[in-house]
Image (cartoon, rainbow, N blue to C red; front, side):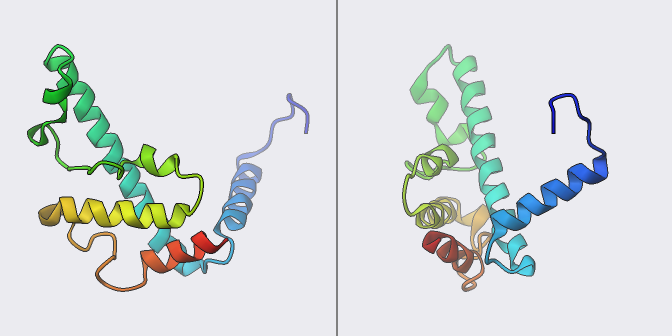
Length: 134
């Protein structure tokens, strides 16, 4: 396909669906949502924390300590449990994600207790284990 060739929306959707199927790999399509939704939520929690951090930093005249105060954030993200920390994991990414999700649940018991499925059994953790092996 040349740089000037346009594709239809249907062709694009078909291409993206095929890519998602390849990325999903051995995970059953029905189980896929149990994996992807927690990841999207984890990413959003990290984004919210970062937005609040930048806002507090601006409000305080670049006071790093103030920007990290728990009172400035809806969610607490323990050291090493931010999305960017997990992205920097070169190996055992599934285990890094699982550890981060557990730390987030523990740091936010009133808001996130059981939200990532860590206490209900092998929903998210089972999918993450599968990914760790591939």
